[in-house]
Image 1 (cartoon, rainbow, N blue to C red):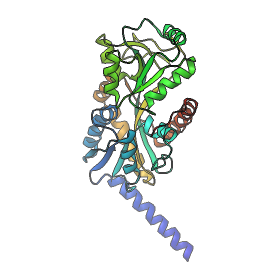
Image 2 (image 1 turned 60 degrees about the vertical axis):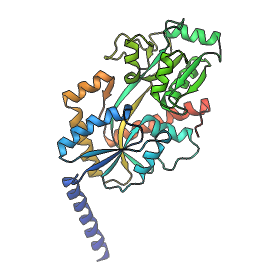
Image 3 (image 1 turned 120 degrees about the horizontal axis):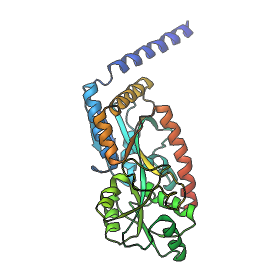
Length: 321
């Protein structure tokens, strides 16, 4: 009798979960962005969420909770009820790099969060000030080896994706530069343009407007092939450097325990939005490649990235406070 009661209860729960998924979302969904408005994550998710809102006839409301390299907002999301009404915007840095560069996080990315979908990814571009004598990556490597520890590179902050991207490049080329951290991508780009630092890695969204204006020089894109957005920019390998694939993805996560039916519903809505030509073209012009992976696929991507960036962080001994 007890076994029958347990089976009946389990069946009732399954039916309730299915019913909830069919009516989901029945109210606005909060989407926490752990970075300031106007940044890469905001640029990627805001138009996507608008299309999703139109599709389900419920609002996906952005809640900016910036600070501590994405840790503050991600923690808030990780500790929210797992009912599908709180989602978290995520990047490569917040999920796969922060665990390696911070001594302790107030959440566990694997235990406390579940992937929804990888919305899209952008490749990083190695840029330098136009006054630099080196005209390509091969010449840059030679110059850096001739003057070890004298040239500078900047990043939007210690322990971020940009910082580790540059460190990965240095590790692969056997060069040594001085790191100059900034508080965000905009001040980094400003000082690159001003010639206060020589080199940096950043997204196509951040770098290509300055490159096309002649204020920065693109040395190479960290990708396996040239970008259709900037076909004139060679890959790092084509320019005489190592064959590196470095960039940042932008995705959606949910608190662990969110029903699978809801995750599937959200993934369906993401892929529907990404199929809209208007949105795909908007992303294409910024250098973003739409992806729309499933929860399971995204989990594998996160696992692989976590292992790769962990090795880079340990080798470079990168630690953030």
